[in-house]
Image: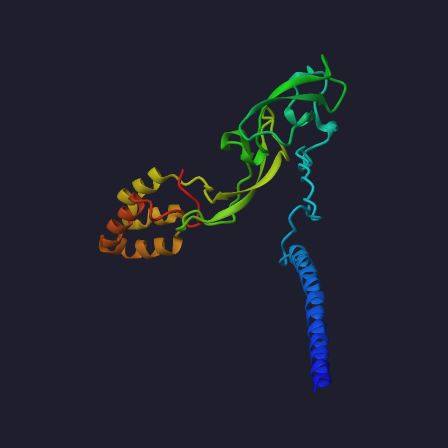
Length: 253
């Protein structure tokens, strides 16, 4: 009986030692895995974000180079006059070193040389320049070609694209010939005062309509004696307020 009891005690002690030894051996392994999990969490980043302490590999785009601001459209050196002082040449006959990055409206100095070497005086000189492109010059600093291929009496006023040229005494950046949209305002020589005078005096015979080019209505007024005066009064009012204009669509002068 004692032998069986001692045997049970031995087996109980052995089982306790095995369980206790396993618990002790597992706990360091679990503690050792925790720092690894923490390290893995530190190295994990969200998509699209750069990890802390590292630099982005995305490079910035290079700065843009200023566009060429010299004249590319005007006449060559053979069209420039000879035997003049170099600084008196038209600005279209000069090659100047422009700063394309200047501030708009700022007055700067540029170095210029004549396109031809047959002028007199210094071949290299400095001129003042207001920083602006030629298409930004005021209306009195360039001349534009007109057209008669549009109606000037419509509302709203029609527009057309004209070729404008900067005047010779103006120095500017870019092309000296440029397109510009202008309102249609051409005239063919009809005077408003003449049309009004004819309408008041000879309107009953259609003289005002014939003068303005509305010959169909002029014939009607002639044979109806101005619509018995009613048509004549209406035309006087229409011409006085400039509602009735030349038949070709031009403006009065």
